[in-house]
Amino acid sequence: MPRPELAALTIADRPERWKALGFDVADDAVELGGVTLRLGASGHGITGWTLRGVEPAGGADDIDGLSTELTSAAAIQGAEPAAHPNGAIALDHVVILTGDFDRTVEALSARGMPLSREAERSEDTRLNSSH
Image (cartoon, rainbow, N blue to C red; front, side, top):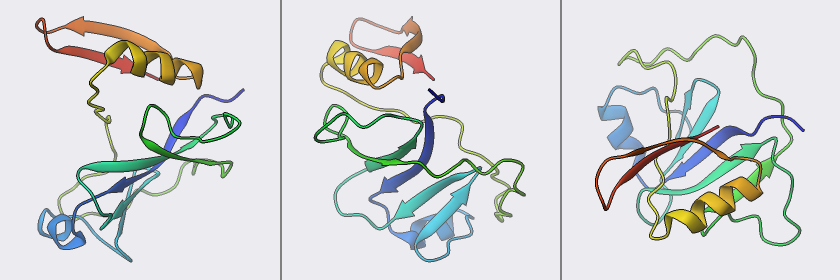
């Protein structure tokens, strides 16, 4: 099975806000290192994501409450990065806030995205990484 990859994020920000930050916005979307950022969704923050290399769950594909679309589209390999006026060329990581850390880790692991490391910050905060 291929390694899960992020293909797109759906974000509840106005496209004008991203333009003001120096991103090249076309059709209410930003292309950033092979990831499409779809802007203008209703709600707050990241409202959904699109993943490739993840098998359907047989029913709803949402992962621990995060709206999830699956795609079989191949990753764009070796494509020229978009030229953003602010110089951004890639997305480094995505932060997911959860009210139940163990439940979220279990949900991600069940879909082929196991936790690869964890760093304790305080009693109430943990920094984690999965890939």
